Image 1 (cartoon, rainbow, N blue to C red):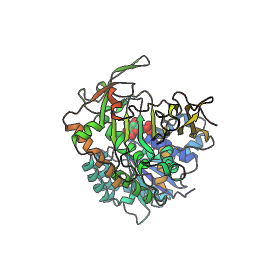
Image 2: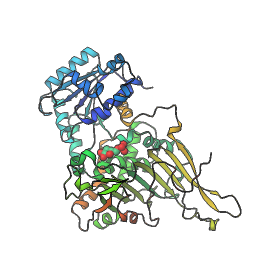
Image 3: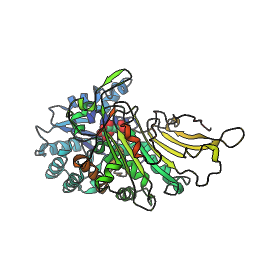
Length: 510
Ligand code: BG6
């Protein structure tokens, strides 16, 4: 186990939902697993008028996100965790003199011996990132002559290529790039990291991982929920900015990348950037028109319950043209992937919540068993990111009896079979990594910009292009009626269920 140095975590926007919902439960897991450093405190900072005790109650003692976990624990044990939390009211604004904050940080550092190491976590609206970084620098809270200083920023990281660039250079005026950790919680998921291991710790997949053997790649990210209470935010964002530019392109980069020369953060990140830069940017309207589909869910009934359409959701413009469904076909311009189509879709209000990568292999180039019915059933490798996390390989086996009839069989691995292993939650893993200075699973500036470079023309076309269509789909179905038209030749998406091996005619080979 790597050593985690003594440190202080300063959370900006600490009174917001993310702190209580994700960050504190992740810290609690680390506390239980004895992975927090010996000297460790959390200082919440935001505009709410609270005292230390109020903050402790809000995010630990009375938090609905920890309630179940705390039930059977002794009070003294819970207090050992809660007593590490402190709060500093920034007054009315984040754009203020951080002199008082500095004083508080110094006092806590002296009292709890956190060795001058500070991690700042910006859990505020992105418009405040630069302001906070600037004010920290003005108060001398960014200097590393007495302990390291790191800055974690949440998504969305920019709204477009231009705004992402401005944000990057703005932050880099006050913190150096190695100090900046851009969080993407998908990179904290075990199964996303396992893409690297599947590819580069085995000798059986990588030789096939190219245009010679792969017919196409399909990535689905479906959510059954709608926009819930985030209509205001979502309506200015949409599926492409909310999910595709970050989470899904991160997954794409791991599928596309070349083998890194080692597992050091920069080696892996260099290859990911190279992968993202090799995505063919769609420039002309016709290509974007033909290779993208955007949709919006409309009111319907799911399991007998009425469900609102997107435009009826709270905080959403009744004439909104923001997409809740996005499907993109694209190519990767490099030696490995030439002419292999990638199909990626993400959407809200789908029949189930699922994220998976499907590698569709080519059918054998010389077909011996002509009447086997195999030609319509390609070999597939399904990497299930969530739920029912695992990997499944589909291949042909002989049906017992005369002749050579072939049926599909599955070889599978489920993470749940590793019963003894504690699978870390994404935030838990990512926080611990940043606490240890490991940036492998954080996005670098050039990575984020390369992703925006690909997404920008699509967003521009969707906003201003001619012949742009917004297709409706009933909440609870697999997207617009024409969604399958994107998939040339094959004709349809794999619409998975919540279980990994859930299609007809499967069997498990032990
Ligand atoms: C967030 C998006 O980044 O990811 C949300 O803003 C989305 O809209 C969420 O619901 C999905 O995350 P997960 O881990 O539940 O797939």
